Image (cartoon, rainbow, N blue to C red; front, side):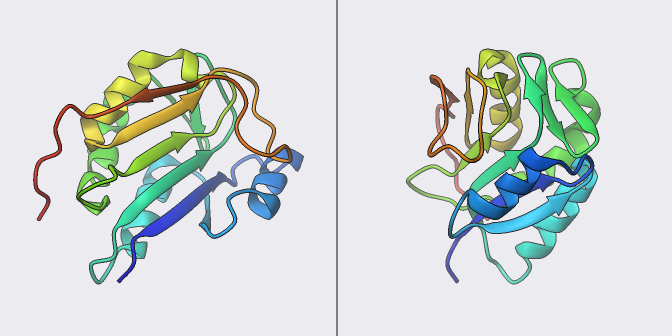
Length: 158
């Protein structure tokens, strides 16, 4: 079974920006509407029934240098521990081997919060990427400098 590329889009706050992500961005990605961290984890778990794994995960929602919204949940350095039990359920769903699976936080300016990227990388043991500038779903590509937290070593996955 091929590994999945998935785009999770904030459905908690439907607006033009989220509509453009859902409609135009990430060609070839499976698109999933999410309303919370728990909702995202539950839906991604269902996607991986039968042994399918996630190669690439994009999380689109409003953000800022403090953190990324995942549905209605604000994921920040201050709240990441509250969400750790749910977020940790994703770790075994990522594909193994090279290239290392990648999670991209697609919100504006969240790449300025390297500590949050490192915290998520520590939970998932995959690369976590975010961008330092405003993001516009209708423009090609991501804007700004990419900030990437990469695992030092990937262990075997069962």
